[in-house]
Amino acid sequence: MKKSVLFMSVATLAAAGTLATLHAQDNEMSFFITSVGSGAGANLGGLAGADAHCQALAEAAGSQGKTWRAYLSAHAQGNQPAVNARDRIGFGPWYNARGVMVAENLNQLHSEFMNLGKQTSLTEHGAVVNGRGDSPNTHDILTGSTLDGRTIDDGQNHTCNNWTSSADGSGAAQVGHHDRQGGGANPNSWNSAHGSSGCSQANLVATGGNGYFYCFAID
Image (cartoon, rainbow, N blue to C red; front, side, top):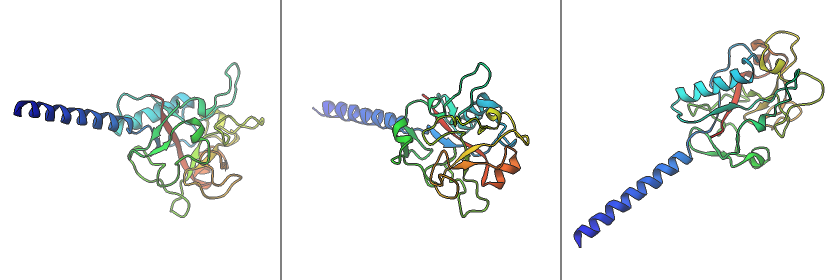
């Protein structure tokens, strides 16, 4: 009888441990703001370079076995069709570095019911990013996107030549406010608040940014 109770206790503990492990895996980081930018303004090396930056930062922070993508849209160019940021990041749910869910799926992410803001839109290390009222303010996050996560199709360059240029005359970068406050046409938007004054690092800093962008795990 005692042996049966002992075996049952061990089995119960093992099952509880397995459930705890699975729960921890479910809540592993799958969303963050880059703690550093490219250092070259909005020249991120294109979408591929931005994805590689996300991957490197995530792995350096301890993330394993996930594929990371930058939340960036790109204009159609030559034979290449336009790319929508929302189509690059999987289907959710997504958790920050502290295990807090920021959105369950794409529809929630692009609605007023997402859980994004200064205290939840964290870096890969779980750090809060400076926002409005902090010095320096770095709340402008590169996206090149509309409110619903798609390319801005108005004939203008909103992606600094698809994230390959920091030169004068290469357009601007559409940015969101990670703290969901500030100025611009949509000051409370996390992904489409306004355009930058240009594509260089100095231009991004001047309008309240530092060349940071969002990263999401797609698996």
